[in-house]
Length: 444
Image (tube, rainbow, N blue to C red; front, top):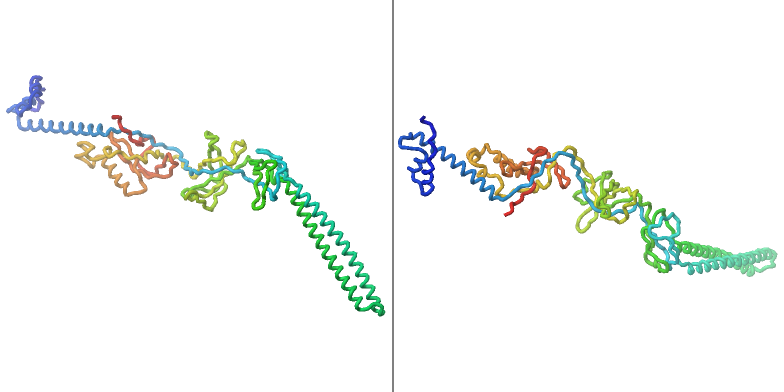
């Protein structure tokens, strides 16, 4: 038949071609073309050969380029689930009410009645200072008061005496039996007696005040607890001298019941807008790294704190410590729940940080013959245009998928993140789709 394909070349002919450079006649012989073969048939055969060689060259070049990249890609699946957004802050656990107990007076500690961790009641004696000096001062003040009272009685007697003399002289003066000079003398003596009585009454008041002060100071030499609670620290020992000249020394630190505590954390100014009173939180402490403790925000303070050049805001969280596992002063790391999103499309944050190597990015030369001849039908080109659109839209960011053995970008619009996963608001991705998270090089 006219359109029948030529028979395969003989092995002897092929061997001769392999051993030397063939000329056109030898090629025609291999292809079964003779001078009688029509020009149209010759043209068809050469076109088929040219297309086959071009396709083979493209496949080989593409495979060689792929092998030369030496790159493998790790992927992760797109998830659909709940996203919990938290703000992390560190702080310190403290009692709800903590009191520093000191001494207003200087002296020597005579006895210490309580020790660390002792439970105490309000008014209970904690320590005693030596009272010998104050007791002597109390005795002196009492003696001064008694002397003032005696002086008052003497002054009252003088007043009575001078008053009687003055009154008698007044009566006698009416009968010309007492001179006016004597009358004036008795009147002045009576007035002096009244003044002395008034002065003695004032001295008695002063003596009583001094005695009261000494007695009060004597009572202050006994240190008592102002609250019901527990002894956190004890800063004195028997025989120690307490100097309260300029500042009251702290002898004991007491705390109310430790079944309720407060966690003080410092929230960064970048996160404080998301933190509000009533939000739930969890925290951990180094003492129990495998345990998570619940807490709730009770106060967000407006006053700013500057710590090493960073502005933070102190936030208070209420903590239930019924098990007494937590102790004052423990450092805690809290995660405050600021947002909960249900049934969200989630991608790992590693995928957002991935950028393929230059040799793996999609180009027209890498898409083969068909893509080169028909670029507008190539999905890679569409993806490329989408990536260019992303560069003009700051709200979008690309994630990469594997398509035809090459990483291709998909622009997505992102939402909230918890630091590990990020919500996707818009984009051509679906649950369980594999996206690239990192590139790994082949070992040489």
